Amino acid sequence: MAEYKLLLPSMGEGVMEATIISWMFSEGDSVKEDDSVVEIATDKVDSDVPTPVSGKIVKILKQKDEVAKVGEAIAILEVSGAGDAVAEQPQEPKTAEEVKTQIPNVDSDVVKGLEEAIESAKASTSFEGSDLYLSPLVKSIAQQENISESELQSIKGKGLEGRITKEDILAFVANRKAPQSAPATAQTPVTPARQAAAPVSAPVQVNAGDEVIPMDRVRKIIAEAMVNSKRTSPHVTSFIETDVTNVVKWRTKHKDIFERREGEKLTYMPIFVKAIVKAIQDFPLINISVDGDKIIKKKNINIGMATALPDGNLIVPVIKNADQLSLSGLAKAINDLAYRARNKKLRPEDTQGATYTISNVGGFGNLMGTPIIPQPQVAILAVGAIVKKPAVLETKDGDVIAIRNLMFMSHSYDHRVVDGSLGGMFLKHVHDYLQNWDMNTEI
Image 1: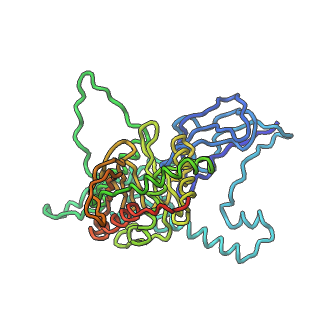
Image 2: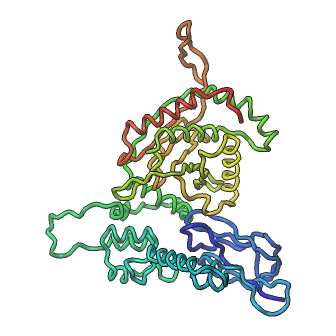
Image 3: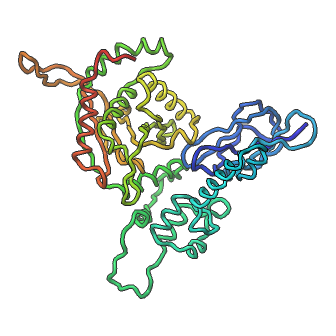
């Protein structure tokens, strides 16, 4: 028999570690190849880790609530095989020399290019040549707050191996005192990081009979993200009521045919996303992010889709390159992401890279809402419930009152970079695409 180290797999760009939520098997249990053996959590998603081999779990190395780094062993399995050598999952080479060792005939220019890329990557995650490891977010806050390397060295990080986390550096900023020689009337410039460290509200009195429910990990992440967004972006919300009668009729005509043909349900969401994509193509300055005093215009159109989970929490899986998908492709992508979100099957990369987001508050019977922008995006659209109402229609024979399917849409945008004209015109174009939906559209 041989031993096999089960390593924490790579989970997407920027994800360096994960927390163990629970083990689905115990020491001594046998597992089969592709069995999900442990549930893990990152800042993005909860997901399962399958085993690539069959065998018996002889030792669990990372217990519940412990943090593991990507590539670190989390369990040891006993697998069939000769010898006592420990088998490990293949790891990506971390240096150019390792690449050269693994590929003996590799061209020297390739090795040189890899060395330069590796050094560049190291430089982007360190702080001005120091030996401190800082995430891009922590580094950005440090630079924004003019925190010196010596000050960073004094911060006791609570992250893995003493790494400085976002919470650590924000706490340092909050407790950092101005120089004693500064005039009492001097005002410190307000920055997003300083705003994020604003004092918390006064303690709430707990009376007899009140139930105290601790926030779970996901709720804490959501709470922090929502507060940060409101502090970062001055929100403005525009509203419009849209006649979606053509959309309702078109979907009613095609939904059964589509389900029989594709084995997928045809919801309204792919139609809404299609209209959003067209409007983004009309107004590409909605598809942007803000970096200090610079505007980053995104090439790709990746649509985030706010999805409610069974436990009441919220997650936003992302439809990548939505502009390149047909209605059928959008329907399949949306159904797949929604299913995997509700069954904790999303990968971290499934929630990264959104450039614009839609939230369907109508799914809960709400007419409208004022959604909060997911940072670093600059806008989000909420669609309300579709309701039959009497409406005035203009005909060649005069105005008439008819029963129509109407829906409110609300568009929240970041007034730092999106003015009312742009935010309003974008919303009007989404409205026009839906209200004038072509009944001959193919699916």
